[in-house]
Amino acid sequence: EILRCLVGSEMCIRDRASAQFGLTPYFLRSLCHDGKIRYIKVSKNRWLLNAESIADYCNGIPAESPQPDTVQGVRRVTL
Image (cartoon, rainbow, N blue to C red; front, side):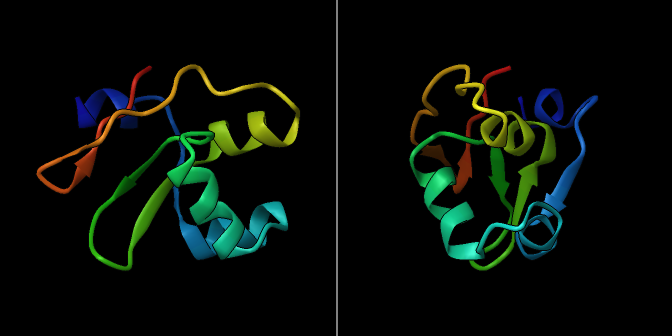
């Protein structure tokens, strides 16, 4: 399931996404928690965010579906 999320998607570290999209890391984290953008939490302080879903959010396109709870520390992503 993680591989399906990564295939064809540009993933970037939260801080790099913050600089690229002009959003604060705190705001990006809250978007992740609210299920508004796709991401993978790879460690306690390292998140990989799906750049396409951030761009969609910035352009007013709603997320596909809310993300379910984490499984073994990894948040499921629906494509």
